[in-house]
Length: 397
Image (cartoon, rainbow, N blue to C red):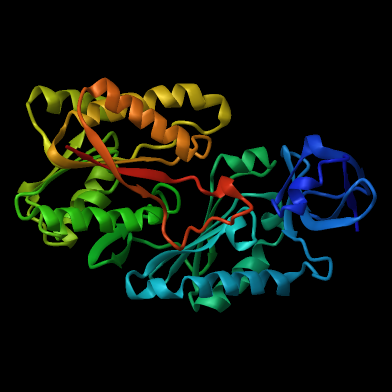
């Protein structure tokens, strides 16, 4: 068994059970571990700290499996972790047949993501360690869920930083020939697991879609919603099914908006009340302002503006601009739900950015709630980096 020896003082984060070991914190590597090999991580005195997966290409040189020296990292260990992760999500079955069933570090399986859409599983192996154990993890997943259809979407850019090539295709069964239909809180959604964003759907916004539905029902049958960066129309559909009168979904992807229209048809929503605008969001915001339009609910759910810490300043400007334009489209008394999925943008920083937009808008908004992903996207308390999605619910007063 190869060993990774840390520099003096660099053991502190592992003693707090943070699961990452950076290359800069390593004094030496004893042995010749290959990509994905299990290594024993020790401090500068040789004392055991963790078992982890070695990644020679990544700045995160080791991702820890376990801090228990008695553990044996093998196929049975992987299957048990998967079984426990799936069991933790069992309460969601009453609301939806779509859920994230494994979420990387939060479930003790760094780099492994698995989503369930009805009877279809979609998996991502985003780190060297889980790539090594891919077959064992999928075997465990099939056993824990009873699903026999597994499709791989290991096409995220992070694989390149791990020295891994992109990999896409069926792992068990055949590739789905059509979008998978799921039902979430009574709303039907089609999920394209082959070509859609992430694994096909934004499961992490389940709780916020529910909140939009509640707001629409509260406002009543006159409610209107503007859904920016709408993708396949999730927030718009939730509002319309709750009784809203009109929705405008804005996205730059014609394919995404075509799927949104199909989703509206799935839910028997009047197409005349469900408008889709193919446009850059900034252009659409300017056009709507010029038209004098305002909405009871405005949703801003942009893509990741800051993929790393190097992009934070530029991203902050982009978030401020889209929020400033969005605030001017909220009716007095209306609501703004605004989000960031950039891990490099902290909750505090995001709130400061939005506060700056409020100041520049010369409008009055109050913060009602902070929004986050649901219970199938938990955050391990010793790994705050896992809290990538953050949101704010504001009301114009």
